[in-house]
Amino acid sequence: MKKIGLLASILATLCISTAPAAQSQELYWATSGMYGPFNIQALIPTFPEAKQIKIPVSMWILNHPKGLVVFDTGNNVAISDGVENCKKYWAPGLCDLFQPSQKRGDVIDMQLKKLGFKPEDVKVLVTSHTHLDHAGNMGMFPNAIHVVQKIEMYQGWWPEKFQGRMGGAFVQADIQAARGFNYLELDGEYDLFGDGSVRIIPTPGHTIGHQSMKVKLPKSGTMIISQDAVWMQENLDGYVAGLNFSVQAYMSSVNKLKMMRDIEGAQILMSHDANQFGKMGDRWYK
Ligand SMILES: [Zn+2]
Image 1 (tube, rainbow, N blue to C red):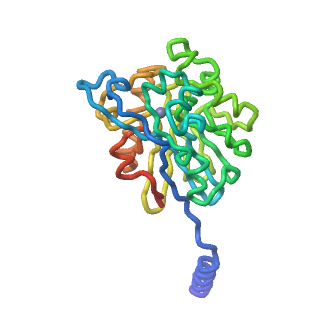
Image 2 (cartoon, protein in one colour):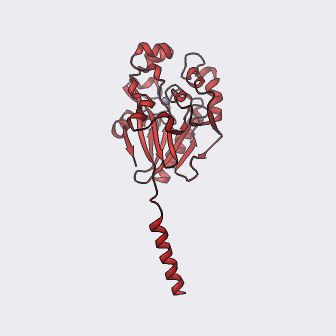
């Protein structure tokens, strides 16, 4: 028995020493320019006092051993470099409200280039929801598999009237540009690479089919990328966002992410929080 045990331990050691070093994923946080300044109450009507804010428009690049992933593509390239360009592509009122300052170099294809990638390298494009600041450049990724909640695509094409069908936050040209691509149409949670490292989590409320992403990183730990399930700290503090498809679903999603954070010891990374982006944005997480 002793000899067999010794042999087994030698074999185990050999197996470990000859196995290739496990590759790990890394995550980059970018912004599609900034919005503002504008009064926070334009976005969060429940906030008790007027306050001018400037906010990032978060996009994520995940370099996973099984392939490159982009999570949200920011504002369409056409609104870059000035309000006059913006007003040719978005409804003019949206340009006046958000005051986007996106430069051509801020757009997702240039962000990828800055990091040594090309849009053609992207294997999976995950879109949180079909609003103009998240689905703007889906059309740049014809070779990727697009991962969405199917119901969100229905809503993108035909929003409820109160959400704005003309000149609202769903820009038809953004999704029209990607209509013929390959879609993995989800109805719920999904383990993207089958290894638990990247999970797609439905977080409806802001829109009917909004989804967030949970990423496990070897050094930085678990990061919950909320996108618009949680815009900014004020929403975590309990001030309900405006622009919801369903306030009840929105509150359930915020609470779900908070409890997931507390149970797992994770961080929530928010889509439009200037302080958090200022401290943590424009860099890799390993
Ligand atoms: Zn947004």
